[in-house]
Length: 179
Image 1 (cartoon, rainbow, N blue to C red):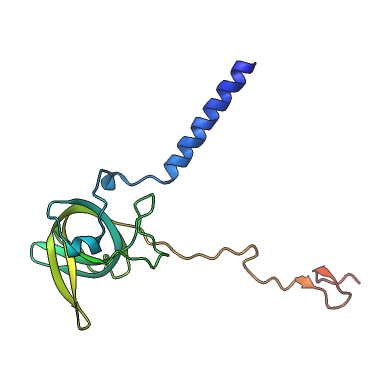
Image 2: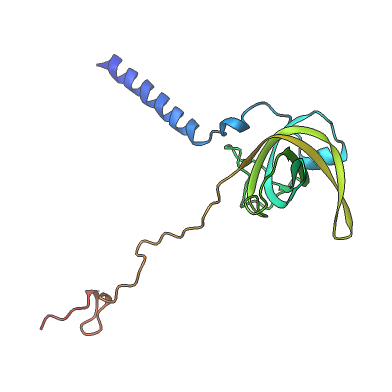
């Protein structure tokens, strides 16, 4: 009996570890080994050919004749590879280009994207009157995350006129009379 119980505990703990590990897995196209460098660091000293996985929110989508380029605000990535939406921390901005057409209506400002690719250099853009240096990445993968809806779940979602304080005899309960 002692052997069976210890084997059961081992199996249960392994199953619990596997279940917890599956909660924060990175999608298959985004898996791999990447250099830990932020877009802000890469803008000041670009290292062409460095393999990166960055993510953030789309600022602008610009389709061209051969490729579509995106300007993104960098956000730290979570354990699942998704940009941290509720976080105001940023690692700067960056430009990502990928061959083909990506519809600006789908890849709209504010949508979350995680990319993998190689740094190809840097470029400069104007934000207001400020010249902002941006690292440029040639993307291998552009992963558009599904939108998250803010649904408020209430325990009692509608007003019921027959339940609440009783006007005639006090207390809580059904408001119907029984005369």
